[in-house]
Amino acid sequence: MSGRTHARVCPERTCVGCRERAAKSELLRIVVVEGECVPDPRGTLPGRGAYVHPAPACLALAVRRRAFPRAFRGRAPLDTTALSQFVEQATP
Ligand SMILES: [Zn+2]
Image (cartoon, rainbow, N blue to C red; front, side):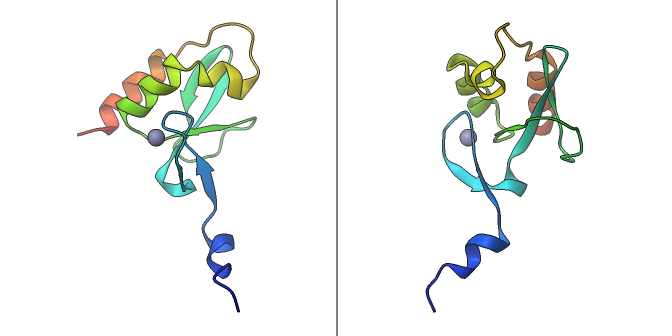
């Protein structure tokens, strides 16, 4: 038996901000709705998702790196206003 058995139990995703892998449950799922990045904390919205730590630092990094347009293969710049507000509220 190797130590690989854990991996399946706890799905990991990469934060598009700091690029670190983390458990899916620790990251905030983000989807694009009509050119706007919207938080999907319950993971219920359809479509392609990107994951980021729900922290202003990671969000800022993701925006600076243009990680969202890349993640969503969008050509137009994506509005992250709603997302910033959500993260600020989520952070004590
Ligand atoms: Zn991060």
